[in-house]
Image 1: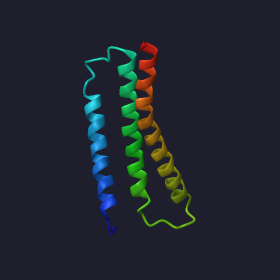
Image 2: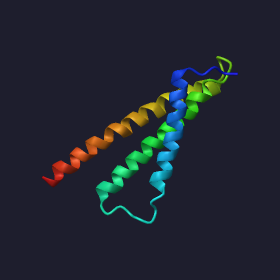
Image 3: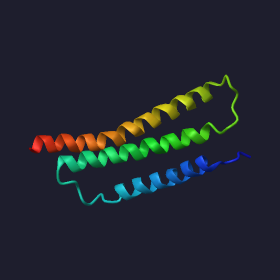
Image 4: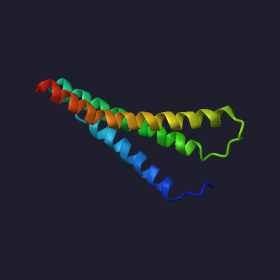
Length: 106
């Protein structure tokens, strides 16, 4: 049995919250975004939730007891790092995109 520390519990809660966020964002299929800015913001938020879900899955995959020279362990480490960086870049892109839209409007 794998022991969970506080960081593991936070990742587990954020995994469930990301799934709930995707469900809530996908729930409004009847109402289409009115402009391109709203559509791009919604896509960036969905991307960050999806990348975070991939991070959580690969993070808990690393908790499995795999041999040190296993190709699966190496691919899980690489997936964890890449999904974390993609999540951060998606989150940072949202305010940058809003600033770019404001500059074009002015």
